[in-house]
Length: 208
Ligand SMILES: *[C@@H]1O[C@H](CO)[C@@H](O)[C@H](O)[C@H]1NC(C)=O
Ligand SMILES: *[C@@H]1O[C@H](CO)[C@@H](O)[C@H](O)[C@H]1NC(C)=O
Ligand SMILES: *[C@@H]1O[C@H](CO)[C@@H](O)[C@H](O)[C@H]1NC(C)=O
Image (cartoon, rainbow, N blue to C red; front, side, top):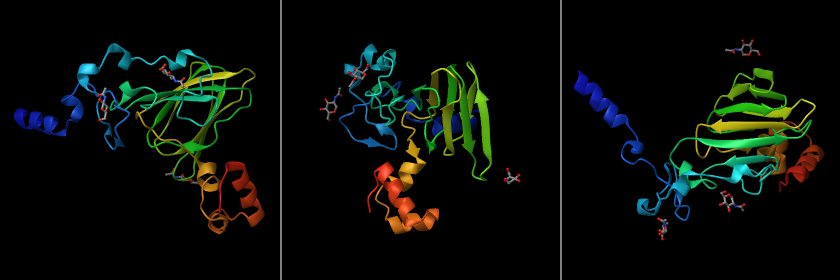
């Protein structure tokens, strides 16, 4: 019986039981298992350290298109490859909002400074909303629409962790109005009229 359990555990374990780490070689293609590994003989301690968040508002060094959101994923920090975790920092001015979006995996958002309104909507369209004070955190379940925003009177600072080194980040408005989905289809699925869709396509950079 013990042997059987042992065998099942072994057969279900991932590639991580074979390799201690797999620092990404970013010049090789990305795939479902992440990037292929950098030559282990050329791995150094620096591969497991990322210093980009030491610089405030370092949004240029981020895979996010939102200026006040700095994401740290494999492309910024190749040591995260295969680790199933990543981090992001939000620096929100008074009243600022991260537009409604989804990730493939769950997120824990932790408030370091300020007061954050945080909401998510489940697949039954039930909305969950809370005000979070400094030191409090919320979990956003995987693949559900959510958004944090600064409801306080001072700039807010948040850190989020994600259960993937490549969590994905899809903004709902950009998905609908930022791409090349033809306007007549966007009108059908949103019930907005032609002028409204044109206006939103202009804001979000969509064509067609
Ligand atoms: C990364 O992959 C490229 C292309 O195969 C290879 O030339 C290079 O040596 C690799 N770098 C490391 C550090 O393993
Ligand atoms: C991004 O951050 C990394 C790690 O600190 C650094 O090596 C790299 O030069 C930075 N790139 C830019 C464009 O700031
Ligand atoms: C789904 O939403 C409806 C209306 O908002 C609510 O009455 C119902 O309890 C919800 N069901 C579940 C399983 O959450």
